[in-house]
Length: 461
Image 1 (cartoon, rainbow, N blue to C red):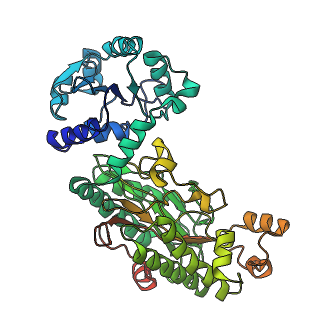
Image 2 (cartoon, helix red, strand yellow):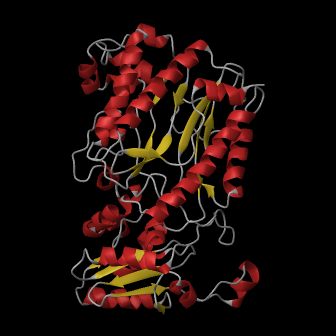
């Protein structure tokens, strides 16, 4: 945990945004895999972690804006729990570590919320993303579970997003720890992959490194020879000479902060000519995007800076044609890059997206519905303290090729005959993490091997 003063400062800053009412924060409960005593590894709600730092189940907190008080609700352990799971400090002792002096049993929360509702006091809560939380809101506030997201407090959402978007030094240090471990995960994968191995052997080593560093993976590992499927979580394929291996994996620290990196490398010792050609195009798009990062620049422009490079590279290969800006406006580049250039990162690998992507990444701006561009999670102007990913890629997706060609879509910009020659290529992408600074941006964590020379040196047999 951070110091109690840090959590107190965060809550004070939040409190200053409200004129009255209650701010309700519900921590997570355990989530059983297949029966109650066999739960998934516990992960606390990230906003609860941000303001209270306590990574144990069955906790809640209420900030009374009118009274200026904060109360943590939780129950003391029974002897049965201690026998089977071990001891923990009392709720009061745990609350002290987060700068809170008032605690009450969890059962008191329903009475307090009931009195607030009866008195007509505003109770602000965040959108629930777990079924258990929806049921808690029903029991505490009488909120219909089906309407809980719509009933959430927009005022609280905006206040939390504004605050969590700007990372302080203590958070940046934690994120860099996560990224440092993430780089080690990628270097290990690059060094070990050989023909005849199964994808899951690499995924297992990657997860081992994350756990060995004291945390876990920050999201399910993507480790695949079929990189054209953007989020491919199947690990049963056998690596063969000539394959590309795409690894999208990051570590999470014990405090919950995430890293998020992607690498693509050949299963053979060296890149084949076509693989090297596409990889160097991706690195050019990556470098172009990084050079565009600075305060005041909309990340939408960073996205298009990378897409411009990719489209023009495709045009040089004869796959695409026509005017660059017209093609980008029409979305022709999304045939080979159907996702956004990056997203916010912090306590969540896609930071705060449980609060609503549009609040986090658009700040009230209109979001495009165009294929590809609608998947840009972060479009707003960049500000100092933002931590984000930069992740251009090129993918040849046979099903997408066939659909667009059958529809005659954007044929003024796409040569489908030439495109078809790449249908068995797969997909490649590169990703690192950046902090926006007053002067521009800096990469977080150590350099990840990513040039052809660096990767082939690790791949050498």
